[in-house]
Length: 368
Image 1: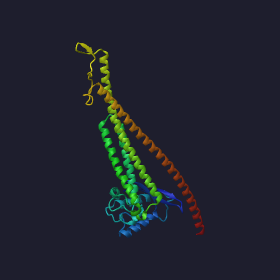
Image 2: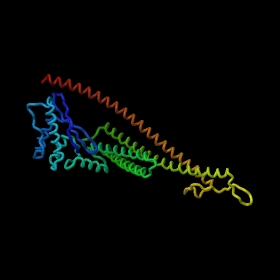
Image 3: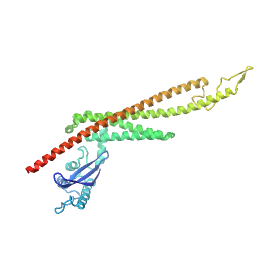
Image 4: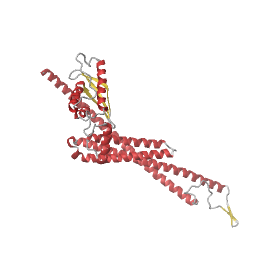
């Protein structure tokens, strides 16, 4: 876990005070918390009480003659000291302060994550163990979903790399193997997420999600499954295109052979036999391949027709994959429109509630 306090903010409600923006970076997600200086002092008292010993570094003392709201130098100094305070607890070899409930509550860490030694590695272990049986915590479920998006992103990068490696067979094979590996992992993660949603009602206990949130998560899984299927189809289409290109090259060599034979016939190449001239029925050999070596002219013609038919089928498969990509893009666009509308409604609700809270605060101030 990486923890820092990069900035501070000045708030005026209910009275001017400084808040410290705590940035927490976990392996699969990052978030920011805002805490007041009094929150750190309360944490220090609670940790000392629960661990029977003060943390390795103490927070800065309270200042009675100056305020951070009008003294930027004091605010910066206090920010640096509070950052060292949290980092000392997070990196200490003694885990007793990290094991306390107050520490997890202060940083809003998931209850399923142990902070005994390394929060980052324990969170990763929690996700890996959940992959086999499905997540049993809504926060871990979201972490697994972020991991799924990362796997799909890696597969897309590998597919793009394969497309850009035209002419380099080894690079194409390596990119295809990497894409298939990421897609297989994504398939397993999608299965685990679906199992987790099925068990949510019974095993998530007090953190049971509402019907709206469950429906949203099911839609996320369905969208990820469609994206995975689309990437698999695209990868198959690219493999078919590679085969098609090889067939076109072979066809070019066959056509070159045919033109050579026609030229020989037009120049009067004949076979002398039985006392009279006749055009030979034997092929004039050009650049042979394993597929054409044992064929006569009729067989070569049939082979060309067969290859052209296979090419048409490959083009149809590629066209179907492109259509699926377009449908997926349209669905994503529709989802973005809906999400934007929901965010707009949420913004209006927040503004309205904030106005009500402000009015209520003024009334409470008049009463007090």
